[in-house]
Image (tube, rainbow, N blue to C red):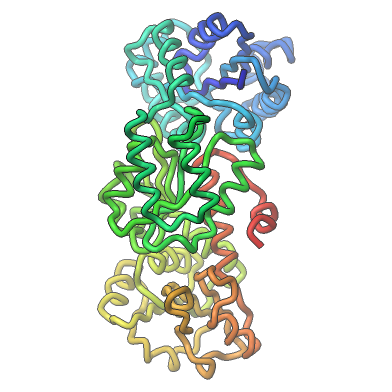
Amino acid sequence: MKRIVLTGFRGTGKTEIGKILSSRLNVPFIDTDDLVETKTGRSIPDIFHYDGEERFRSIERDVVASLPLADVIVGTGGGVVTDPENMEHLRRDSTLVLLFADLDTIEKRLLQKPRPPLTGLPLHEEIAAMMDRRRQNYYASADFCLDTSETSPALAGERILALLKTGVPLEEQRKTAWAFFKTGRIPPIPLKKLEDILVGTAHNPMTRIMGVAGYPCAHSLSPKLFNALIDRYHLDYHYTWFEDPELDEIMDVARAIDAKGLSVTIPFKKDVIEYIDEIDEHAAQQIGAVNTVVFSCGTAIGYNTDWLGVRKPLVSMKGAKAVLLGAGGVAAGAAYALIDLAMDVTILNRTPKNAQILAERFGCRWGNWEDFDRIRPDLVVNATPLGMQPDTRSPLREDQLQKSMTVFDLVYTPPVTPLIEAARAKGCNTITGSDMFIEQAREQFYLYFGIDVPVENMRELIL
């Protein structure tokens, strides 16, 4: 039997429900908190009080790494999901069920089983603060979700068993999704695999779908990368292309089949915001564009990881004079990254009004495309689709490039664009779109699954 792992905050019923599943499936139940106490011969409150949380997390990490990989139910501590190393171990060949409940219910349950506070806040405020802090981690830990607020442990156990048997989408929903995917440009071999997953005789209800959403998006390398990562970490998922000119069609299908997430690309990064429930307040709200949607527990949350993909390769150029070409959703993420690096930024666009709107949002300069030559930047960032099929032109002429410039083309297919070729011919320092793609995809994978993939592993999978 595949290992079942229960995650969630304290008071959501992991122990009681885990024991019921253990009895029903005739396999052992293991509580990671109990293992920590057995391993140390001390109580968890004692470890927290005398050694601190860091020491506790270290012991917990060892315990998680030693768990059996099959024929067992595992109940985890409330904070175990915040550690990427734990998530790598817990997710391997496992089905993870996130248990959650409302604040009042959790508070009532915890008052019956007092534990030392994790903060100096009153209990209700502490629960709210800790759950908010861990929310993204909990959602990343969820293959399936179950609200235990008004559900007895016995009924919750039955519902989990039903989920494991049938999954979430109904047969009719899977057939509708299959009809949608057939209209895209998915290559024959991946399309056959998708057919088997959705409507084939060997349909596995535990396998969940996710993918890249755009039009066009058949050129995207995301399916190749994410499916390789899914195989590497032994996850029960399949990543495909959600290609359609109508975003509402894409989102309807994604919700109907209980998709885990979407990587959103051109031209939907701004439009997708109206289709989701929340957007990340730290980056996506300020950028005004979403490239990552995580579906979990009935909620769709939007994030922007593009800006991290731009920022990380440019850390050594803090304070540089930069020209950003383009004013769309990708450019918004790039502008956010460049401003975060304290650069002197000028945004240029074929439609100057669009450059002005974006520049005023971030407090930087703007201008006409023809203004490029007078600026003489240290850094050029191409955030237009020029260089990608079907328009393979370079956004700049070779004579506009200077040896002293660093040229960063965010287009990653083809890996070496006409702009990068011209920049290399001039002796410029160049950064290809592959660097941006790797960094933003690495962050996406963390948002989806809580696993922090080493950059070198990402690079070897696509290069």
